[in-house]
Each structure stands twice: as structure tokens, then as C-alpha cells.
Length: 462
Ligand SMILES: Nc1nc2c(c(=O)[nH]1)N[C@H]1C(S)=C(S)[C@@H](COP(=O)(O)O)O[C@H]1N2
Ligand SMILES: [Mo]
Image (cartoon, rainbow, N blue to C red; front, side):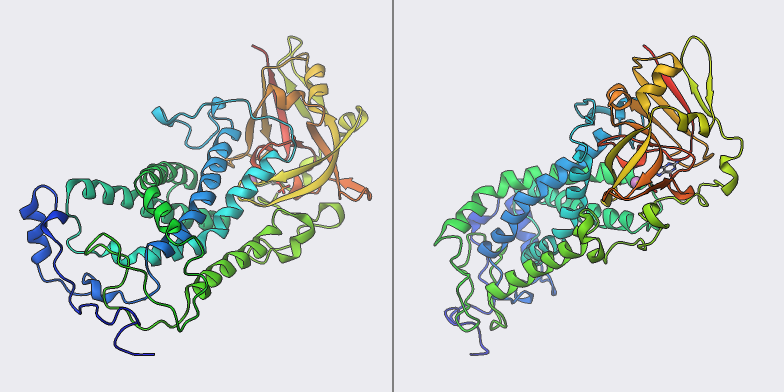
């Protein structure tokens, strides 16, 4: 192995030739003048010496992101819709002309939100190594000098700002939210929503501009072209057609690893993150969920599963059951009050349903309690247009929720009193942390709207 450059590139000039006139657009004098300014590293192309960089390598990471990121985007937007923007309870509430086409979030299949949100968070995590690898592969372009050579390129680079800034912002805020770290000081949901649109704009522009390059790079010689090289026969890709803005090193160092090793390392990183994350969605693999910020014990027996907001944090004391009476409103006959014994005396229904949090974790449980539609009928509103649920919790942001008609009327939608494991074992009263005396459980509803410590339900008719 030589130290003067990789085999096959030994003739590469130490200082790259100035780009030809034709490389500059209007106003030519400006861009060319910029290019003549002597610049220090990292702006000189010679700073970037890895012989692995090139359009093929970037395209390999690119194609993975092209397949993966649209799923993250789509499931994220679906989560916004699942929150019920029609009731003003999605955050941000007012999104102006970026209003999504709304539809009533279904209650079937009951694992719908568990799947979409598990994918959103899980895939977001798994793609982090690929995003970082792709950024590494294109970093010389970030520092290319002159920064632009035409107005078209200026626009392209602005779209890159949205793309790179957007994805980094979304990944960092998303991960911090899952870790309960709000040190950024602004509202997570609002920022993550607007950040998503900045990113989507950059992503769409980038795909439109780069898709042909990606396809061409992967086609030449077949997608596996550079995969079979050992370290010894790893040479730089042929220079691409963007003088000065090339991904291929102008003075490459000798290779220290093959492309196969690099891609394998990134894939291994993603696989490891995936293994450490999957347990937050798949119950049987829960012990693997080492990245979860939450401890893994929350109660005893059937009540031993994740708690997002404890009774203590919500200001709910152990005496909450004393003198408890659920208030039902909406009917012409006025309020109906039911203490817990009255609730337990009504027909009980059992359903096995997940709690699926927006933060990606979910867990199956068997719940029993009173059907929401039975409560609606009892209140005198058998066909409500929606229902407003209020917790006994005073101040929390999730102390209230509005449920759609289909969510009230689904036969598995419950005001749950008891909970059990999914193995058919004994059931127990809800613990204080899980919402005693009674909580909402609705199939496919985002976790956040399964209100705990329910104090009142208002069934609204048109
Ligand atoms: N009153 C009230 N209900 C609430 C919350 C809350 O903060 N207050 N948190 C919600 C969220 S974000 C989730 S994910 C689920 C979690 O339910 P669990 O703590 O029983 O697992 O409860 C929901 N119900
Ligand atoms: Mo949640």
C-alpha cells in the first residue's frame, strides 16, 4: 500500500484544476471571483481524503433513506390526525394552510396506532446511523468553495439547508422527547410539527433533484459494484461530473477499510438500535428495551406496566376513591351520578387492547369495565356526536379529551375499572397510577387520550 495516494489515482493532481468556464452560471464573474479567494481547510477539497466517498456510496445510504423516511413522515402525519385536530386537541391546534385532510381515526384494527406510532419512533431511531453516514458521505459538499456557481445551485443549496437542518432537528427533538428531556425550552409538539414540514419541503426537493443521479450511480456496474472489494483493492470511484463539488476525494488517502465494512458497520449500528428499541412495542421482547428511559417496574401484578404520569405527579391522592362519583352529562334529564359500586354493578365488558403512547412504547393489557356506549345511553344520549371526558386531575395538559362518535360507540370502548395481563390470569382493580377509580380505554386511540382518573363525561348531541 502506498502513502502517496490510492492505486489508480496516483496521477491525481495535488491541487485541483480550476473548474471550466461552463461550470459557472449567471452572474459568472461573481461566482468565479468567489472561487478565486484563497480559503483555509475545511473549505479546500483536499481536506476530505477518504477514498470511500463517492456518488455510489452516497446513493446506497440514499436509497435506504428514500425507502425509510417516507414511512416516518407518513406515520408522523397520521399521528397528528389521530390526535383529533377537528376538536382542536392536536398540537399545534392551528396550522393554517398546512391543514391535513382530516378523517375520523378508526377504532379498528385496535393495534393501528400501536403500529403507526411504533413505526414512527422505531424507524426514526433505526435510521439515525444511516442519516449520520449519509451526512458523512456528503460532508465535502457542505464545505465546497465557491459555495455556489449558479442561481439554480443556490436554490438547491437552500433546499439542502431545509433537508439537513430539518432531519437533524426532527431526530434530536424526537429523541429528546422520548427521553423526557425538554431542555430545549419550546413546545415539543409544535416544534416537531413545523420542523417536519421544513424537512418534508427539503426532502421532496432533494429527491426531485437527485433521484436521477442516484439511479445512475447505482446502475453503473450494478448496485453491488463496489461491495466486493477488500481493503487492498478499494480505490476511489471515478470522479463525478461536478468539478469542485465532487464527492470523490481529489487527493485520497490510502483506504483503511473497505466499503463493505463501512456499510456493514452502519447496518450493524441500525440493527443494534433496532434490537434495543423493538421491546418497547413487542411485549415478549420487553427485556431488550434498554434504551427506554423508563424503569421497568410500575406496580404489582396486572398493574405492573408503564406509567407516563404518576398519580403523585397529577396531584391525585390515595383518597381519590372516597366519595367518588362519575358525573354523566348531556341528556335532557340532567346529570347522572354513579359511584364506583354503581359502575361495578353495571354490565361489565372485557377487551384486550394496547395502550400506545405517542412516544413509541406500547403494551397490551386486558381491561374490564363499563362500555362507553352504555354510559351514553344511561346519560340519555344513545347516539352522541362526540364525548368530552374530564379527569379529576386539575392542571395537566392531558386531563381532558374529546372522543369521536365511533370511539364512544365501539363495543370495546370502555370506562375501565379493572386490568389484567393478557394471559387470562387474575384481574385487579386499576392501581392509582393507572387511573383508579376509572379510566378510558378505546381501541386504536393514542395513549394520551386514554384519560385516567375520569371524573365526568359530557355526551354531546348535534
Ligand atoms: N388524567 C390523565 N390521563 C392520562 C395522562 C395524563 O397525564 N393525565 N397521560 C396519558 C398518556 S400520555 C398515556 S401514554 C397514558 C398512559 O397510561 P398508563 O400510565 O396507564 O400506562 O395515559 C394517558 N392518560
Ligand atoms: Mo403518552
